[in-house]
Image (cartoon, rainbow, N blue to C red):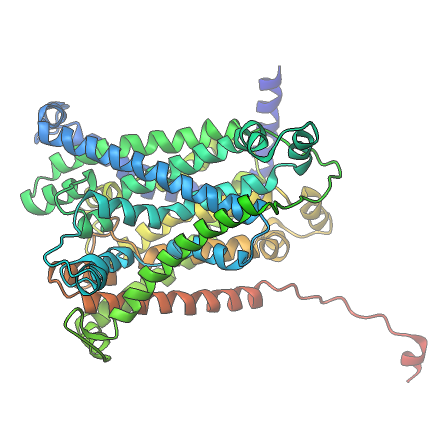
Length: 571
């Protein structure tokens, strides 16, 4: 009965949408774009992997991969790395989140900044800092400890780099969960005689467990997808993303590379689906809408200061890593001549100014398109109910779970021949950036829209406004923060992308990240540091510009005339 009622409502709203041309066009266009640029390339990769050279169905390549001990070993290494990084990063993220939300420590704003900085920074930063600090010419290993010939390449360095890169993901997930737990639940435990430790293990920890699992799964996905860190600091510890790259660029075996890409895609998608459709339904509601007392922050010294010291040490390590890279960009020759100079910047710009300009241009275009399209898709999925909505919901966020290496292969296979021959052009890079990074804008927009009462738009419609006008003048200004978040994230990820574009760059459209990767191969770390420092500066400038422009364009403009008094009328 309930299903029949739901179908009837969906049918009625679908009929209403058919009478609103602008909304209908938005739905059809979103459906077509997602089908073409998300489903089609992934399906192309799946079909290509499971067929032979004649196009006939074949599992020969898959069987060969599974029977080869080397690939099994690489797969096991990749999973092990992901699990180790997920556990350690989630632990650090939890401690940071708990300290910021529950403990009365000084410098909370500083800790929040340190816990989010790695998300907004370019790749290669931490790998560079490890080399500068602990490499053969390392500031710590050689200059302070007197160790010569030390090697920083391998599993240990890779774990450190990935943990510092991805623990902010766990922090952001867990800080929201911990802040939303009703304080009265924990206070009740304390009033019944439970100490802080017992209250934590019997109340706080179980209530935050869904966030812990969600954060760990998200970190695990990021570790699987990571290409830049294993490529630069992994050494002999090869992961699946590196193996796929080596097979395609070294052996020129696209079919075997696509099969390995599927092995990389499978655990990433499973982890994403577990997080989205299982973990998110395991939350424990403690926010009832009833008035509650303000949270009393922990003041006990034996809890407060150890947590403060832990966060301070992690923050100091982050500052050391980032400060080292910035300092190295102004040094003439690291480990030999520490005199200050701008030569690294001059050489870097001579080597790759065009690539830096390409990254900024394509990143800006894709960020604006992705932000707008993300708001549209968020609107038609959060505020409308129609046949085909489920397809748009799933396919629009699917790219978030697809490893960048798999995405690059999919776009090569899907758009390498007519009538969709886009490889080697700037258009395909804009498309990849747009659909790769758009899920964040959609999720942010959807969360905001679900909090907006439908009666606001209904009032606009009653007054004679069509759907497009209501969306542009009422809904979109309310989406300002979500729009800003989506654009900033899209631009940041676009100009720092590596794995998704490593197969798609061309001599005409070379990007700054591919140039930095080439500088690693040439051991020109000073120029790489200069590029990374410039990218940090560019990101900060563009974030400020985005904020200013969006506030100006979406600021509410009242056109209601002021009533005149009788005195004014007589004048």
